[in-house]
Structure formats: structure tokens, C-alpha cells
Length: 114
Length: 112
Image (tube, rainbow over all chains, first blue to last red; front, side):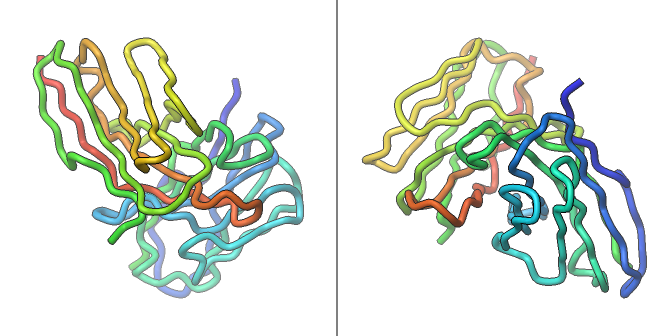
């Protein structure tokens, strides 16, 4: 089944404790992206990747890191999480051309930073 | 002012009614997406448009590039259409900067 998977789905952590949210897709998509969704603000793009070893900042990259060492995986790293990073996070992928193609979304990761 | 504005923010209608959700943007774009977010949180892509009109089942999406406006229509609405509908745009026409900018969504509730 074609899908985007994220892990964990739910995470409660404390300020400053490094964490990684994994994202994997099995559709051989070149483009992958991370978003956060907050009430009243909607979805905002954190980072995106056009292909392996190619990443770029979205609109809200501060406090986040990403890497794209393999085509199927695009982990989101919070080196020192803070409470303002409490949010619902979505990973998405699409074929080359990114925003010019249908986006496939993961199920979301709800993160709470205490 | 947000680059992408959706209206209405909330919409409640009776089953069977014709639904229209609007998306206006203030900058030049090269692609526009309509997404559906289910009550459980999952997001599904409905349409990607760069011009004209697309139809899938009871859903129709249109875009007017000159007027910087897109609409999503649902015919014969059903309670299972209850969801948040989100408009997203790829700003600009030059390559590079391949990111999406989102509206804040329209919450649709269809009453049986």
C-alpha cells in the first residue's frame, strides 16, 4: 500500500531533550516536506527536500533540523525542544516538482513539550 | 494580511445542499491545492490546479488566475463531507523556493 508513515504518532517530552520524528514513504517520491499545524495559524512549512542531500528552509525552520540521506526517509530533528514547538506535525511527499504534484500526507505526530 | 485567505471560516449546511468554499490569494502563483482534513486529523489531497477546472465525483475545483481566486464546490453534500478544507498555493513562477503557503481552512459541517 502506498503510504507515508510517521513515528511516533504521539510524544510528550520535556524542554531540552533532543528528539527525532521519523518520516518514510514507499512511493519513490523525490519531494518530501515537513509541516506544523497550530490552531488559528493553519499549516506552515518547516523544511522541504527536492531530492537526496537537497534540503531547504520553509517558512518556520527555526529550532528544527532535517536530513535526507536516503530517498525514502526524511527525519525531523528537534535538538533542544521548547514549549513553543508543541504542535501537530505532518510529513508529506510527492513526485519531482513538489508543489506541482499531488501531495501525500502522513498521519501526523502530536508533540507536546513541557 | 495572509497571502492566502479562505472564506467562510465555518460553514454549516443541510445534507444535499450545494457547497462553495472560496480561496483568494494576493500574490502570483503557479499551483494551487485543495486539501481535506478529516475530523481524525488525516489530510488528503483533493485537487492540484494551475488553470481552469477539475472534477472528481461530487467535487469541482475552479481557478481564475487573473482574479487570484479559486473555488471548491461540493454537489449533493453528505455528512461524510464534514471536514476542514484547506487551500494551499505555490507562490511565484520561478524555479527554486518550492514551498507551499496555506490558508487557515474552512470547517464544513453537513447536518443529516
